[in-house]
Each structure stands twice: as structure tokens, then as C-alpha cells.
Length: 126
Length: 157
Image 1: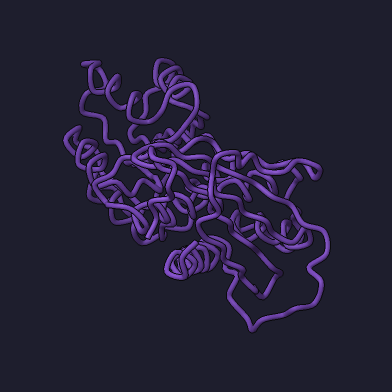
Image 2: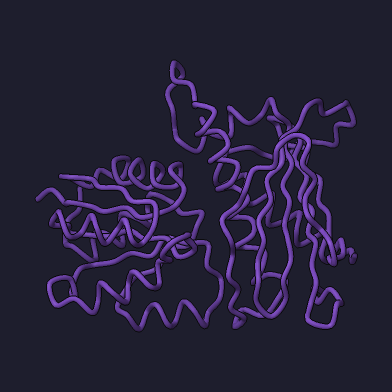
């Protein structure tokens, strides 16, 4: 099964690193959509069915925390697997995010960490 | 400015360069660094401040190339190079704050900005709280932390 993936980060380089890491980790990818903030991410979700979302926290326009709240509030997306990929170091904020049922990968990350979490969330591996 | 802050700053910056850009520390090299490029990021929370990263201009293409995993015949565009610099600074800042303050503290980190060559970082009302100079195999980098707290005193250790 190939995964449709949405990557949301205001850094184009960070988005490219995540996509590259997924390919290096040999995760079978279908459609890959990219967005530069939460608002663009929601717009991409409206138009495309995604199996997995990677989202940063600190972004302009709409940050990742706000985007996750809106995704979870929409019945169509409420159970969508979400992975937060961020430099966030505050345990307070991380715990708040985990309560939304997301997984967390700390930047800088390794392909192994990404592969393990994707496998756990989707059952899809190499 | 405390020696402990300098040590933490140097450790976080070195670890970030190693993990993100595959650039490693070498012995001190006092040869002129040449032209440089800087980026800054601000943060707000229990304390607020500004982190400034300056790197040798000639190492910028390698930073982007390594982060993106480009092939030998591929060249990072200027936009990719500056975006890579911003991302390195973003990761340094994100890892630095919990190392200097409480891990329970919540900070809001703004989007990093690349400074134009003639532009100095805005440090009004801030104190230089730490400096780290890195001698990496691809060039030199310097990180400067300017911080302030509600009472005007830098809170960093």
C-alpha cells in the first residue's frame, strides 16, 4: 500500500528532508503534498485524501498546534495519523500535543525514527 | 554572559551541525573567515531574546547540499541555501531553549530571517548572554545569544 502524505512546514528544505527521509526509509509513497503553514495544509486536506500528515509547530499564518486542533475537530479527519516533526522542547506543549493523539519526532531526526513511527501508525513498512 | 551558557550554546550548535549538515568540529583555525552571512530568530516566553547565527559564505552551498542530500552533479539554489541556514538556526534555537531554561517553559519561536549584509541584528534592550564559535571542517560558524527577562536581566544560567 502506497501512502498519500501531506508535509506541512514553513521551510522548503525541512519539507524536502522529510520527503527524502521517507524515500530513504523505503516507505512506499503515493501522492506527496506539501504546504508552508497550517492554513495551506488544511486547504490541501480539503482537496486530497491523505493517509498521513507530518506537521511542524512554529509556522506563520497558522501554526501546527492550531492546524491539529482543526483537523481533530473535523469528523472526516479526526482519526488521521499525524506526526509532529519539530524542534519543540517544551514538555508542557509536547504533552498537550500528545493528548491530541499525535506522535512526536524531534528535529534533527533520523530515518530510523521516521520509519519506526510510520510503521507503527500505518502498518506500512518497506 | 556566563561561561556555562557559552558551553551549552557550543554543544547544541555543534550537535545540530553534525546531525543536520554532517559538518564536524576541527581544531581552531584563526585564518580569516572571509565573507559571511547571518540569520536571526527571536523567541518569546518566560524570557525573550534573539539568536544570531553567522556562517562563512563559502560553506553555505555545502550546508544546503548536505541537508537536502543532493547528488554530486546537483547544486543547491540560492533560495535553498538561505532556507537551509534558517532551518539550522531554527533547530539550534529549538534545542537551546530547553537546555537553558526549564523544560516546562513554553516559548514561541518566530520564523528565522536571513539578514542582509548591511543589516545588524536588532538587539535593543537585550544583553549578550552567550557566544559560541565553531570551527567546522567546511568553515566557521558563530552563534550569539541575546536575552532579556521581564526585569531586564538575562535569565539564562
